[in-house]
Image (cartoon, rainbow, N blue to C red):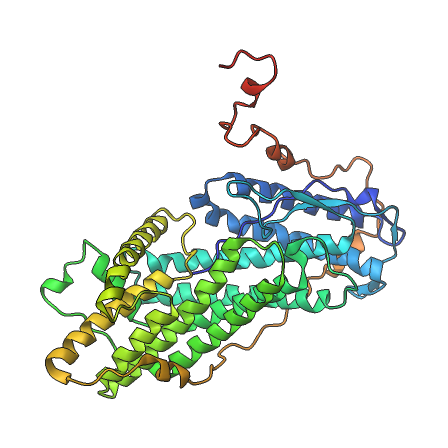
Length: 474
C-alpha cells in the first residue's frame, strides 16, 4: 500500500521580473504561463475532497510535464549548457524568490506546514521534480486501491493495475535518484526537509522497496483469499472450497527480503534527518516489517509444501514477531495480549473503513492485511498439525537467523531530462507581444488559507471574528 503523499502548493511567480534573455526573449514569459497552470492545478487538487483527488492527478501530471521543459531551459541558460541544440543567453536581473509549502516537515496535529521562502532556481526545480515523483506514487496508489476493495477484480484488471503501478513506482524512483545525484553536488544542505539529501535518498529507497514488493503481490493468491472471506456477498463457499495455487515461495521470500532491505535503508536515512513527518517515518517502519513478515510467510509456505508443517508454523510465529504482533506462549502473556488483540482488530476495522471510503488508507503499509493472511495460515496449519502431522514446532529465532539474502528484481530507470522541442525554441526567439498576458489563475492565493478562519488553539473554525476585542461573544 503506497504512502498517501500530500502535494505542495506554491506562491505566484513571474520569471520576467527575475530573468531576461537576448537570444530567446519570450522564454521567461512562456515559463511563467506554464507555471501558472501548474499552480492553479495544485490548488484545485488540494481543495477537492480526498476521495476525488485521484481523478485529478492526470491534470496535475499534464501541467508538470508542460512546465518542466521550460524550467530546465531556464536552468540551461543559467548554467551555460545547450537546450535542443541551441545556446540560451539568460541574464539574472535580480535574485529569484519563491515560496513552496513543505509537506514532509513535522507539524503539530491538525496543522499543515507553512510555506517557506527560497531564493534560487535550483529550489524551484527540486520542488517541481519532487512533486512529479509524488504524483507518480499517488497514481500507483490509485491503481492498487482496486486490489484491496471488498469486491475482487478480475485477473485481467488485477494484472493491469499491478503493472501500471509498478511502472509509476519506477518512474518515481528515477526522479528521486536524479535529485539525489544532483543534490550531492551542493556545498550546503537546504533548510527545507523536503529537499535534504537524506530525505530524497530515503524516498528513492522507499519507491524501490514498494516496486519490489508489488512484484510479489502480482502472483500472491493468499491476500485475495482473505479479502474474499470478508466479502459478505460471496456464496462460493456453499459449493466449492478455496483453491490456492502453488507459488514460487522461496523466490518470493527473497524478493520480499530485498524490499525489506530497501525500507531499512530508507528508515536509516530518515533517522539521520531532523523534523520529518512522523507519519512517513512510521510508514517506512511498517513497510519494512510487512516485507519481512511476507518473507517469513513465504519461507513457511515453502516448508509446508515440503511436508515440514512444524517448521512452517515456526516461520509464521516468527513473522508475527517481526511485524510486532503478539504471539503468546504462556498463560501470563496470553492475558496481556487480550487487549493487544482487541486493539489489532479495531485497527484492522478502521483500515477497512478507510479503504471503503478511499481516504487516508494504506498508512499501515499493508501490515494488518498481511497479519490476517498469517493468522489464517497459522490457524489452518496448527489444526492440521495437531490432528494429523504431530510435528514438533521449533523455536523461530534460529530460523529467522538463517534467512537467505534478498534478490533484486528491478533495474532502476534513468530519468530523462525533459527538453523543449526545436519549434518551441525557435518561436521563443521572437520578442514577446506586449498584448500577451500571462496565465490568469482562477483561484485565490492559497497562502490566505494559513490565516483564514484560524485563531487560537481550540477556537472553532470560522469564528475568529467572534473572539475579537470588543465583540459581544459570551
